[in-house]
Every structure is written in structure tokens, then in C-alpha cells.
Amino acid sequence: MRGKQPQKPLGGYVIGGGFKGTLHNLKVDIRRNTPLYLLLIIILVFFIVLHYGPMFGLVMAFEKYAPAKGILGSKWVGLKNFKLFFTGPYFGRLIKNTIIIGLLDLIVNFPAPIIFALLLNEITFKPFKKTVQTISYMPYFISSVVAMGLVINFTKSGGFISEAVASLTGQASENLLNTLKWFRPIYILSGTWQTLGYGSIIYLAALSSVDQELYDAAKVDGAGRIRQCLHITLPGIAPMIIMMFIMRMGMVFSVGADKILLIYNPSNYEVSDVINTYIYRIGIKEMNYGLSTAVGLFNSIIGSIMLIGSNAILKKTTETSMF
Image (cartoon, rainbow, N blue to C red; front, side):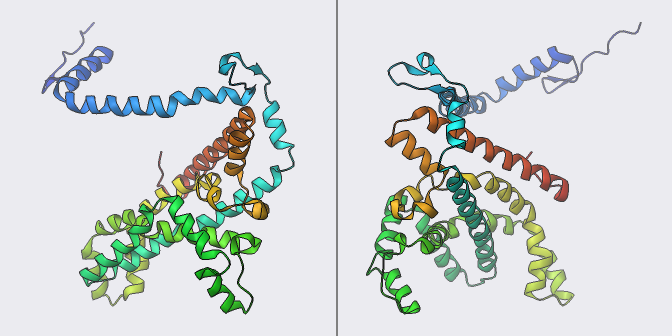
């Protein structure tokens, strides 16, 4: 029989060689790029310690967890915590509010940065453009506690926003956060105010990569601003929009982790209470760690399903996906 072809070195690497060749190439690569591998180790340790390590705590979802006994010593109850959540009096309200607020946030606050980036892209006077960008970025860097404190002050009876609404509706000024019909608009628009400018950065970066010659050719053909936007700009940044949309779909059920906790109260629970606020109340206030972990696990599973599902659908329809 003819012997195996000799391996040909390529800058220290070898072509072929099976497992031994792969191991040899890895050793060569580590020697050549030692600083990069050290940085990689730091990143891996970060994710293992802070992201994957705590996942062991999911065992509490199947236990009647007692802090004194610990995770390994607590009583195993199986799916009892999940049954308590699914059959509880708040299950319907939590799912309904989470879906409504999550979808409203998606419908309003996902396209808003895209539209803002498109508008900024049309500004040719650079000093004005930079000034608008800087001002729009500022709310994102304000602490959520401070931002929601401003919202509470502006929407309370006698506040700036409450007075404006009262003058428009002809009604007396009232605390808008205590009014069921106003809570969701306030929450969504406060998110728009905070994320509009910062969220546009990635789209502005994508716009800078669109070939300018396409615009010149479109102008020669008589295309106006709107046609250029529809046929050149949007198709040029479509892959980025799809990627961000997939990521946003995975977070639809994650609303309320911080902001709603800061502005909701028993008077608006009917429209503001979502899964994450329920987890906080059950886990922190009532110290029912098993039930809160079960609800959190359920929420994470639903988010993962939405992420994977939207990725699969868009991969088939647009040929663009995250994985």
C-alpha cells in the first residue's frame, strides 16, 4: 500500500496530520500568540465564574430551599414550585403584562434608534450633527434610579408632565403613575428618552459602511432622498437591523428588571406587575427562593425559545442570522 503523504510545514503549521497535526498547530499558535491567549483565558474565567458558575443555583427551582441547609441539603420538591406559579392567582396577570409591555417596547423602542440614525445621517452640517448626537447620548448614562426619580417627580400631581397633560385634556392635575392608563405610555416613552441616542450608534456605524458610489449612481438616475433611503440605505443596514431584532426578541420577557421596580406601586400592579417584578417580591421580600428561582428559570426558557425561534425564522426568510 502507498504510504501516507508527508506533512508539509507552512510557517510552522502542518497541513493534515489528523489529531496530532491539529494539536501541533495549536501549540504553534499558542507560542506565537501568547498574549492573545492570556486575554482569552481572562474572558473565559469571567464567564465561567460570573455566568456559568451561578447556574448551579437553578437547582433551587426544584427544592424547598432553606438558607440554613444550603442547596445540597434542602428538601427536593420536583416541579412543585412550577405548579405553584402556573396555578397561582397572579400567573395570568404577569404573563399578560409582560407580553404587552415587552411588545410595546419592541414596537416603539426598536425602530426609534433606526429612524433617529437615518435622520442624523441626512444632516450635513457636522457641528449641529455632533451636538445633537452628544445631547441624545446623555440620558443613557444617567443612573436608572436618578432617571426614574425624575420621571416620578415630573408625573406626580403638580409635576411638569402632569400639568402638561392636564392642560391638554382639560382635567385636574393628578399623579399619572397611579393612573392605570398612563403607566405603560410613561414607561415606554421613558425608555425611548434613555435609549434613543445610544441605540443609534450601532446603526450609524453600519451606515458609514454603505458604499457612497451607490448614492451617486442613484442621484444620476433621478432618485430622491426617500428612494435612496428605501433602496440603498435600508438594504445596506438590513443585516444589522435583523441581528439587533433577534437579540431584542430574546429580551421581550425580560422587561421590568430595574425601571418598573423603581416606579411601580400597589395602585398600578394591575398593569405594571410583570414576571421580573414578581420574582423580586417573592424572592427578596418573601424570601421564597425556590419559587422565585423556578419563575426565573421559566422566564429564561421562554426568552431562549423566542431568541432561537426568531433566529431560525429570519435565517430561512432573509438568510441573515446570529447562528
